[in-house]
Image 1 (tube, rainbow, N blue to C red):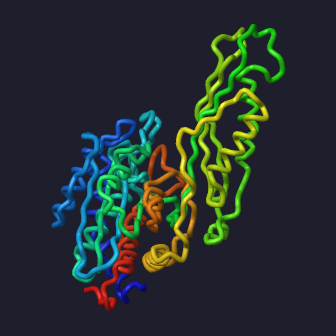
Image 2: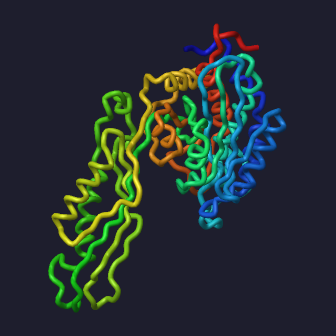
Image 3: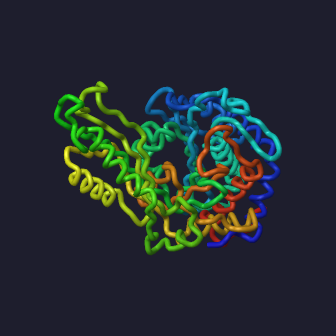
Length: 412
């Protein structure tokens, strides 16, 4: 499959022509508050619903929980063909101490080529770009084969049950055949892979007693500290990529193929002069392609048994996932990004979790590509305006390839 002669040109022209409307949509979404841990997406869903309706589309609202609505919108092309799903989320991180921000938190800034505001990178700009691309594709639906669906969901930031997980369980038809997710891996890379996640609780125990009688490594805190020190060294470990994804090893960044280990919480003991009879840590492992969470768990369990008095319990976890680089979706996205931006997006491993893993778990080819500027969004969240505009063009151009009509007709 190839992009029609002027398909990418059409996509780029559409994105540039609609720049101001796109920026306005981003501003409306930043102002429509939806931070976690509450994660109420009512306001941003209303913004996108109105935008789609203004453009002749009929979105529907689907919710498992009243204050966490999800938006779904679908249209069919003129010919039979594949089902392409465009997916993003509308909840955001919590801003934390708003006084620490140097830009307004809930008001989009536009300065020196940057758009700022809470959630603009993760990922309201990406969701706005998806919605705009969806409108553009709808305009050319008579030239498309198959079906296109837009899903903008709640509950992704906390990877909860009320967003994409609910949609896919409620309506298996939303699984589709291809998924483009607007979670940017940073620096406009093309995330064809995603690290696995393993959260564990590690509990150390020891007999009660007076603190002055404690021996070397006998308290629960000492046992736990010994184990945590050992696994902290795993942060330096890197793996070789899977055989069908050798490209990930070509110029890989410092984090792409590295196992990361983070002790997120730590508590132990009850009084300064007493032996600590219990100590607990919660640890977050991010597991690169080429390694499994079962391997990490087995190593952790062996280390715990060698120390003694330690119980390891999994909180949640899933393995790394990827879409082979020669998959039609990856090829289409590489061609589209090259056509729109002059060079293809670099294939990378996305570090944080995304809803793309939910589609890959169902056997669907899925990639992440979006305007998030850094590896992760945080204080003074921002995107580059031109990246957001380009994303509209890339999504459209890739879709014109994936859903090419018979004969690959010219778009007008």
